[in-house]
Image (tube, rainbow, N blue to C red; front, side, top):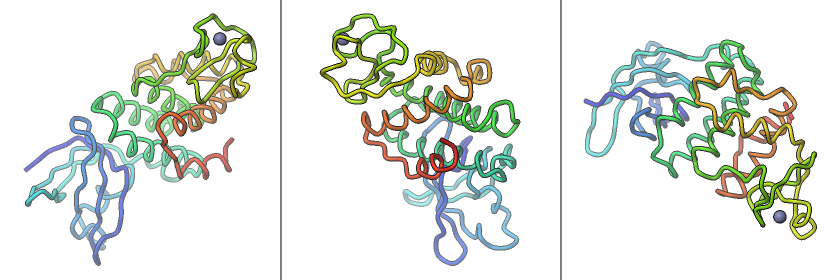
Length: 246
Ligand SMILES: [Zn+2]
């Protein structure tokens, strides 16, 4: 028997009554497991096999496959599930976690960033935009690809203009001298300062480090494109979020 503290990142129907779950284990990263009978009306594991369910999961192993036996659910993120904007932001976080787990073994911080971001939306201490902006900022920080801010990504000179010129290809801010030679997008300085503050804040400090609503929107827009450029992470769920929120 195996025990993991997990959150459900993805579910897929399988056979007549089963589900295949993609879970994020706090200690072990990504886990795939089969939830037998989870779609039956009176299944004991129906709730555990839902997207966003989080708690203590138990599995048994047969060959190299894991089967969910029971779970003690601590959090279902009910308000997130039932609010379109919050749910759209949560789906981006889940997809991002799923994709990035293959590139890291720093599970603990990523797991906590996800849980605290969801929890802030659940409790309404942060808007869905603020919560998602934090998640993006923390992710790029923990993946070791935090952009150059305050110094030019090309020549290393100090930068300071507002708006700032940001290059996806060079990975950060570009100074006035280098800007004519590089493709850049214009970003409010306040959004970059928020990005630095959120990226450096522990998941426990998510509320104190939150960006303003406008800065948060800019950070999400910038970092989703940045991740796509740096790591070829194409987020299907961002389309839905963008149409609705940005
Ligand atoms: Zn420069």
